[in-house]
Image (tube, rainbow, N blue to C red; front, side, top):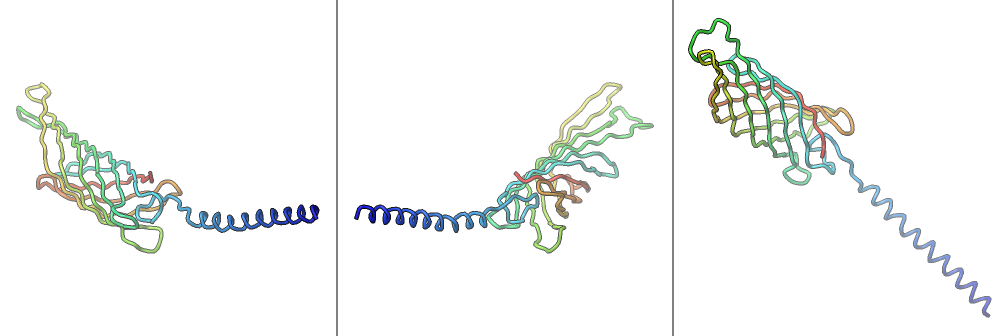
Length: 203
């Protein structure tokens, strides 16, 4: 009788062990299905909803071409949305050709710093190129440099800048994409064009 009880106990333990393993299998499979990777393309519906952008560009204003260094942050406005909000930061540098310029106060260059609240909408299209349209508007801090009677001087001016931002994202791999856009707008009524190419990283 005791031998029969031992056999029954062993069979019962084996059955419980098999049932536990069988019930765990769907859970592992379910978790695998729900795992979501990150993507460097804003709006791809991945786990990342925050993106960092950085890169070089040109700064063209009043017929004068300078250089630009661009930084930016974009955050998904809501879950599974193609609308993103953030900030567009930039450093713009202009040097002026003063050869032959006559005057007591000669401009030699300008450094501009922009901090612009931003919103972009990425269009849902098929393919590997992801177009978007955005707008940025906010303060532009301008540092103007002069030569005054042979001595250097400078002043500071706070202006309003607005930019319209057509562009596109292009995937370059699992962790980085390329952003190409031509910002165009105005700084206190003066037309400005800021073509740029940035690397985009998901955070």
